[in-house]
Image 1 (cartoon, one colour):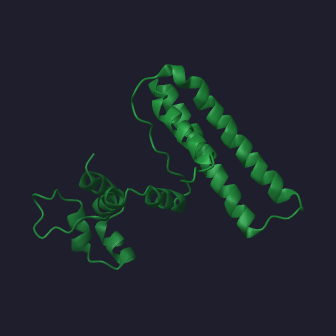
Image 2: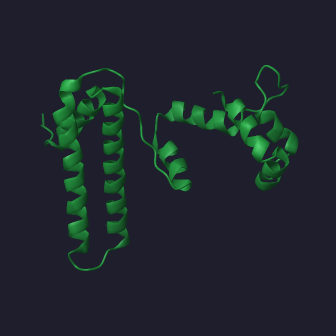
Image 3: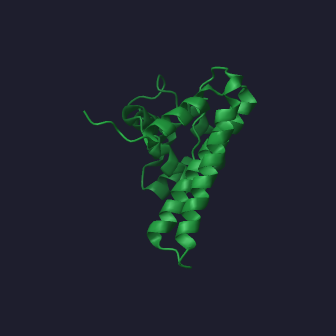
Length: 166
């Protein structure tokens, strides 16, 4: 689905007039977002196209994660579609390790029977990582693809090794 098609569908439930008023923009500008580029004179890229461009430019998925968090969700990147079912064991090991990491952070944070803001952020970060790895695993199961999960496991293991000095 193209971005303008999605916005057109959304504008059936929430009119451009309301969106414009809420965002302090003209109704006509908002209305143009729901038109294909070839038909819209002086078309301004809609916010969805701009976000997509920002993601492509930066390559930083934290933008998508931030948006997802704003609406109470989280972003999960789909694994690549290269079938390697023999990589099931490393994938499950990664989930177990992520869960162990989360439990370690929780245990350390609760040892003194109080949780600081810094500890809360660390718990949230570990939880988000566990959800991401687990969702990637479930998606890999659905697709019969464990290559991406395996590569993430190898990369994570390699980053934990001490760096050699030259």
